Image 1: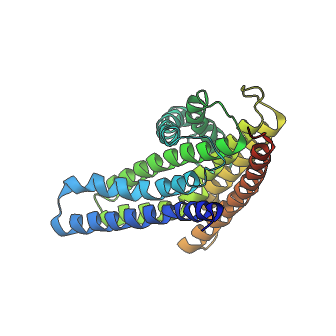
Image 2: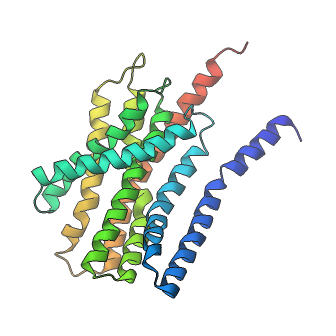
Length: 281
């Protein structure tokens, strides 16, 4: 087999490894859930919640990491981005949201977007200081990691809140984890990837800049985030079912994925053009 064909085959194999992450994690989640139900041992509850809330976010980041052949990011950068984006983002949002938001209604849903999209970028900025090549594709991948770190920790919080509100109902906890797990690729990771990608692209001489394009990208993700959070409130006035909520948020999420796909395609094109323009020694 020619060298180019062999390299392409290996890369294709690696780009499907995220499926193994998803399947292996799903099996471990089902095993831990079955064991918890069988034994009733409360020590297994944190394991079930951790697997249930981190599975899809980790799979999402794996999907992007396996397509890094045009990116200079390391695995350590992504792991740290996931951690910092999650911890700093959730902490900042928890501190700021009570100061400005008292009831979640359609108007305040967009304010949540303003706060959380800024909060998640804190994790991106911490890691970005040590990244030399501030290209859009690096920003997209790092933003996806930071956003999904936020999503994983936020889902853990929701699972714990539902556990308390339902007075220990495991079914209620599993339902909220499954719902947020299925919808998570449409939300935080996608929005932060879009904003971070444009933020990196607009940098100049290794320094970040707040340009019109950055502000525009920020407003786009805030609107997407606000629409996502406002959908339940808007639909609550209508005789709808839970499926309608799911469909409504899926449509908003699909719009975000479309924007991300456009940015990803452009980032790959620009990075490939840059690599091919570099003279070989």
